[in-house]
Image 1 (cartoon, rainbow, N blue to C red):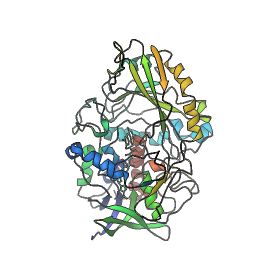
Image 2: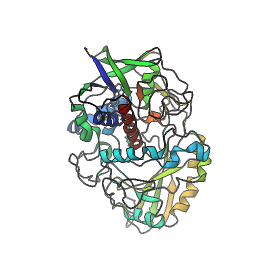
Image 3: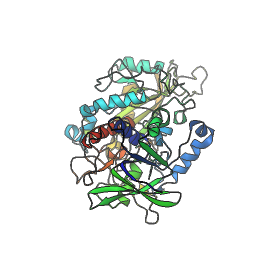
Image 4: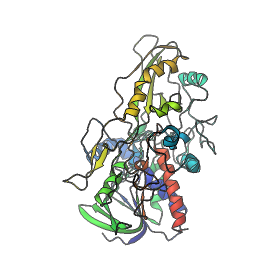
Length: 482
Ligand SMILES: Cc1cc2nc3c(=O)[nH]c(=O)nc-3n(C[C@H](O)[C@H](O)[C@H](O)COP(=O)(O)OP(=O)(O)OC[C@H]3O[C@@H](n4cnc5c(N)ncnc54)[C@H](O)[C@@H]3O)c2cc1C
């Protein structure tokens, strides 16, 4: 394959890469030359509905070796990455989540603060047309949510009355008003493959980026390494396509292949740093089921409707993990006459900390397939979960409850992949700096959830998308591409 030199080579087309590309193109001159290498193919929505979606999910699982299969890692290798299968819950992190070491003596502070990221959060929310509460939020906001919130269920309304400052409508990329490209969410509860293409995906809102005349998109191209001169300068990438190895040169290389594959690509390229590949982490959740006394549920207008912050902020974070509570609005029936809808399911999602033993490493026998192992939730997260039963009794006290129970085992996955290429100010304890530029190789950028130094309770995708906008702004300015 004959590929000339590019100003910018981008790996992947998921959230991380596409939000970066979006802002970089906005800030760049007309003759910029961008190459995008995507391992998957363009899979149109009707084709996915006809069975292709499940086939890609299965195929994606074969892309890595899991040494601890009791802990699954889910994602989709396809144009648009896991935007094809995400659910679309989009909380921000709280300001305190960025300052865990300073405030609670736990883990690390992020090298970027909430205030610096705030305008990028707003921009990412506008791009995704997020529907969220306009009558208050748990975090400071400089602009209102682009769309009004989804309708609460009656149970959400009871929570809101009991906890006016700690219970809110869940912000989501499932719209309450049609955008020029997407219809209103129909509330069917099968969001991982939205039947009406309402949920934000890269294909339905940002697909136009890849038709920009400055951009060349090559699909079916699996990047296997970055080429580094003298340990300090990246000159391009190597990739396989159609069974052959190719090279592409670039002045700036941006990795957005997710936290498993970004780390693997760097490890395969000989860029060994103490933190690289270690610290694979995600949040961990418990399910709580409540039998209600005389209150019907499921009047909400989307899959998950409420967000409870009753277990989130506070001094307990010095000792045990904070949690975010989701109230689920997907209907289910209670098997008792006259009480069919008097049931509530909640997901209580705890933050977790990076552990060095949980890691991505190269396979000795296959340079294209990482191996992954997970050491389990940290004692910090476990202490949070251990306290749940008692805390839930207190939280539910203002509601009409017959009984409730907490599932004994945590859910197996949150489908978030974080922590393998952390950002930080100290090169000995992190892989990239606060602008997501590699500490040693200054024309190499690493995006996505891998850069999270801690896994706050909030779902990560809005934050990693905002970080991509933040990094692109800085790099486009310093490269003087405008
Ligand atoms: C079922 C499910 C539900 C989820 N729900 C939510 C939610 O409600 N809220 C939330 O915040 N998050 C959710 N997530 C997580 C969310 O999808 C991820 O945080 C997000 O997709 C990460 O974006 P990314 O661009 O870093 O990675 P991805 O979306 O994984 O994109 C990576 C891209 O890189 C490509 N790629 C990989 N390796 C290579 C290579 N070697 N060469 C070239 N290309 C490569 C892939 O094909 C893909 O296009 C969910 C995830 C799943 C699986």
